[in-house]
Length: 142
Image (cartoon, rainbow, N blue to C red):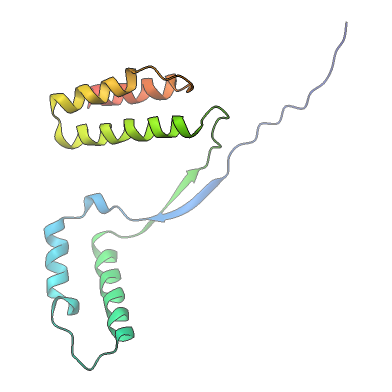
């Protein structure tokens, strides 16, 4: 009998902090009104330099963003891609996600059909069955 001892280290991916804003929750008309009511919603004085105009533009938009979509910290776990995940797989996934976003926006039957077909279509080199199944369930249940 031959025995051996292999080290089995489980490496958990580190959590990386990111600062994000929830732009989807921002009311576009409220944002447009805030810009119109601000300094940048009026004609700039001709005496200001380009650098001063840019600083004003940056500060005002940052203040509006802080008010309407406050920045907050989220933690993301970065997972290394599987060895079989190549450029073809990436392109297929990108196309599926594009069709899924289109369906979620329109809620149309044709877009739903295209979305589901993109998950079911055979892929030659990608082992994406679990990803395809999760996405198809989310597309069908939306």
